Every structure is written in C-alpha cells, then in structure tokens.
Length: 228
Image 1 (cartoon, one colour):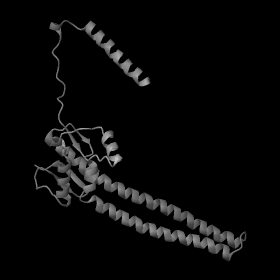
Image 2 (image 1 turned 30 degrees about the horizontal axis):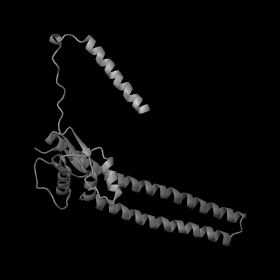
Image 3 (image 1 turned 120 degrees about the vertical axis):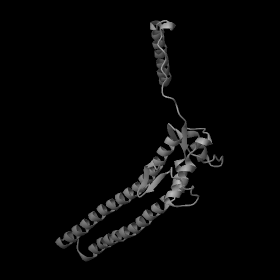
Image 4 (image 1 turned 90 degrees about the vertical axis):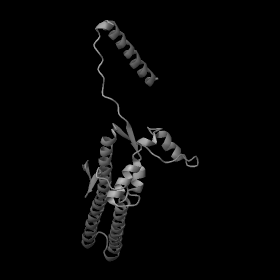
C-alpha cells in the first residue's frame, strides 16, 4: 500500500505540475523552439563471469596464492600443535600453582598470542594478494571496455550472464530471472572480443589477430589509450 501511495503521489504531482505548465504556457506561435537533448547511443553487454573463468592468467595466479596458503596453513598447524604439546607437558612437569608452573604457563600463553597475531597477519596478506590479482583483472577489463566503447560508440556496458537456463538446475533459472538485462542482441555482446584481446596480450589460446588499434599490454594491466 505504501508503494502504491507513493506512486500515486508522484503521478498526481506530475499531473498537477503539467496543469500548471499548461495554464502558464504561451500560445503555440510564441513558444520557443525545443532544444534537442544528447543523442542516446548503443549499449553493450559483457559476461564478466565467463571472462573470469577463461582469463589467460587469473587461474594460474590464484592457484599460486592457494598453494602458498596451503603451505602457510601447514606451517601454522605445526606451530599450533607444538603449543598444545607444551601445555600438556606443563601439567606433567610442574605442579599447578607453583612459581615454576606460572612462569612456564605465561611463556606458553605469550607464544599462543604471537601465534594468533601471526595467523591474522597471514590471512590478511593472502586476502590482499587475491584482491590485487582481481583488481588487476578488473583494470584490464575496464580499460578494454573504455576502448571498445569509444570505438563502437557505446554509452554504457551492462553486465549479463550468458549461461544457458537448465530446468534441471534451478539456480540457472534464478540467475536468469534476477538479471537486470533479460534480452540483448548478440551484436552488442563484447565478451568474446574482450577475452580474445586478453588472450592475445597476456597469452592463451584462441588469440585474436594482432591489431595496432588495440590497447597495448603492459606490466600490471593494460594501457588506457589505443595505439594509433
């Protein structure tokens, strides 16, 4: 009801404003010529998920980080087990409540604190490493979309999913129905073009032919200006 009331209020407000304008408008012969607004251009679409799945370097970089994380996890697990073992030995070596026990217990507690701080630090380092890789890919895609938009006159590029709907997989139907773009002409889909240029410049299969009009590859991303 609140939504309908809001819509009704807007509609009534619009009608009231139109009535005022009509009452105050000069005669047709005295009206100034209408000025044309900015012309609307075509809109492109891109399946970013597909590009991420097939990006020529993303998986390798993420796998490297994952391998480093697994190695660090084993190292931290070994340290954790050593602390637990010291706690067990503490009760066997000293009597609880004695100065020796309290001293040894404090040392173990300090080690556990340092262990937890190191664990948090390593987790943040790996999260930052993953974020940097994704930021690099995002920059690459953004640069190519800027270039393609200027080349083809796109005023915007919308994100879509090209995954086929499978009635046996309800999640694909949910994804299709929840998209903002329910239909697009394949002629404005730049997904394959972006992926082919990335493969050409960063390595991979299905590379597009070389072109002097494509943005040049560079370390850490792609240049924003196409070469002339």
